[in-house]
Length: 109
Image (cartoon, rainbow, N blue to C red; front, side):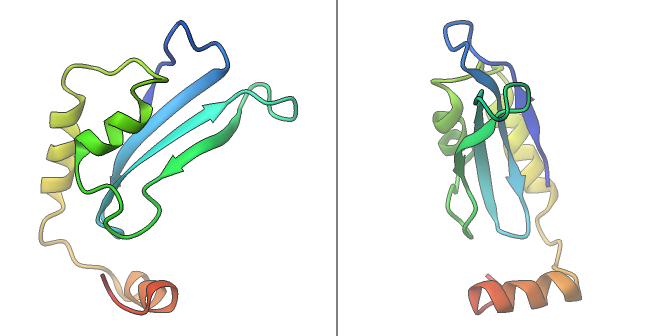
């Protein structure tokens, strides 16, 4: 799994951070946006969290589109995320991951 923390846009002071990455076991990219809340003023709460289901965000660009309104996007981010995905081609789930997928999703996909 990869995970990259992105700096909030200057015009979005309520955003603490945005995160994107690749989740090999779920075969999806993911995106999160953490917003400042009264209960969590420093850490924030994940008010946007996409990519928690198998294959939900199939491309790096899809994950970036989720966070782009909230965070600064490095020019090479899509390429870095695609490289993370390609590095995991052929990597198989371990026994515990496979069992968790069967229980959660009914299959290994």
